[in-house]
Amino acid sequence: MSGPALVFVEQGPDGALDELSGQALAFARRLESPLHAVLVGPVAAAEPMRPDLGALGVSTVHVAGHPSLGAFAPAAWAQAIAETAARLSAAAVLAAGSERGNELLAHVAARTEQPLAANCVSVTPGDPPEVTRVRWGGSLLEQARVHGSPLLLTVAAHAVAAEPAPAPQEAEIETFAPELSEADLLVRISERVPAAAGGVSLAAADVVVSGGRGVGSAEGFSVLEELAELLGAAVGCSRAVTSAGWRPHTDQVGQTGTKIAPEIYIACGISGATQHMAGCKGAKKLLAINPDGEASIFASADYAVIGDLHQVVPAISAELRKARGT
Amino acid sequence: MNVLVCVKRVPVTGGKIVLTEDEQAISTRHLGFTVSPHEECGAEEAVRLIEQHGGSSTVLTLGPPEAEEQLRDAMALGINRAIHIVTDGAEWDPQASAAAIVAAISSAEEPYDLILFGNESADGGNYQVPIRVAHALALPCVTGIKAIEVQGGTARCEQEVAGGRDVYELPLPAVISVQEGINLPRYPSVPGRMRAKKKPVQASTPPRPESRLEMLRLAVPGGAGKQTEILGNGPEAAPAVVGVLRELGLVP
Image (cartoon, rainbow over all chains, first blue to last red):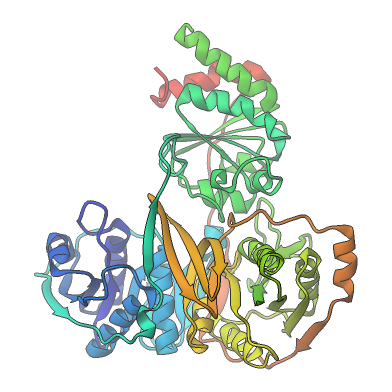
């Protein structure tokens, strides 16, 4: 493969390199091409990322600056990436498989009329290159050939670790002003509405107590809420529950809901459909409570209680109160 | 206004995915089918927009002859008519899908003010068909939208992000991909289902272009091989559960 691999990178919340961008860079090294990075924003933002970028093997960082590029504008950002790829005759263009990474590379793919493989977990260089990508929210893998140039792909989150490169680089910064049309800037963020404060966030909770169809009704969640309060946990639910209107969609754990990563996930009356498991596979431990010993959720569970949640959950709450002497 | 919503027929997978022997597809012998979740909300959103602003709605799918079932489901919600790009069941890659959808949109009698998609299909998860369609039609596009408000010639769209919601304002016509949670789709009424049977479906059978993202085979990821510790049966298991929570340092 001739020409460098170009990776779109973003800044993390602390100003350093975003975690998933780091993983995308480590993944891109498998293509055995010189590694370049492209980012959008002021040079001042690139400086604190340089040490990480160099350690990951990036020789050059292309920083797209433009007076109109302050707010995120998908088409304009994609133009900046596509323009850099063309200038370098890049052999491959990659990004993290985040919502934004997938969105931007899809724009690049549309502009360059090339195929895009989203959420890859492995790549084998060749002519054509082969990738393995995740489907069904991670429940299925697809092996595919990508017939296009440059090779466009996004990297599934946590498919690889952001290991430093065997040969660290200087990560020299080069700035450029992309050529943007009016149409490129038509769609842009005009406002950020902050989230309402309060409650334990599902995505960040250490403990999640979740209910499925087995809860039976909206009112049935009161026993789960009681346990969640005792544990300082967030309350979640399955898609069957939101479809029935028992809980808001913001509580849904799953492929089309929130992806969680708690220390323990307590799944009550949840059968364990693939749609649901795609959202909770990041949990370190899974405790399943279900009256059906054959329920598929038990195959993924670390701990199992066979029983009706309406009896088991209040008993756990009572036991916790007893232990605390309240 | 004139709204188009694109939907995909996908199997309702249960607890475990089983593949066909040739590893080219999910074995669906024992499975039902549905509209991919984000797109189900797209269909509901189309119906609500027409209820609010007047006009008409169309649902489009690219899929096997049986996908007419999903078109009827969407029309049972209140969508007026359907376009069916009929395939032989083989998967079309995202570029081919987008090109066929663009051709169907371009040959529509009345131009669409709004073209809705799901953010990504449940099965393919390619995250690109809406953007490719928008680019080919030179229309503005936003993805992952959880709220749409149309006023005059503008759509105000909200996207959920860490820490809040990002707002985009798009001039119509536009392409918007939505996420589940934008609404709670209604349960189709019996009269709605009856009416849906009589609504028009315009079918075409274009040839399938060669895949540039060429699927070789599917695989089910290896099981975690988890050792499950059974803590007990019924309420008697409560002390053991609290013991586990204590071991993990989650209760004092």
